[in-house]
Image (cartoon, rainbow, N blue to C red; front, side, top):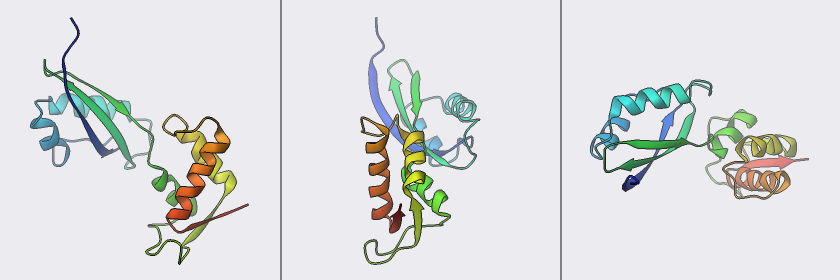
Length: 142
């Protein structure tokens, strides 16, 4: 018989740095998920990723206290700020620009995030990333 799904939980956790302290511990504990088991599994799975980059994770938890999780790629905004060498986006996007990225950089980011993007090909993915850059106050050139 299949396990009965109780719910789904979405968190953003730094790669390789999951620990039982807030916000991870309380979010998992109140749903009956084994916190240490999740932390060990998450840290092992994100070992190869750049340390400290917040990664979205979707956790499905079941009635028998077991769980499965899927780690997504880093948010596009994080990758764009890294490409443009910025700490944060513009305070007033559309009125001020805080940096620039090239279309080639947008294409590279789209290539990394292709599994998580709602696009049919790489060119459409690059356009999605370029739009996200413009909405953060980052100018897209070339």
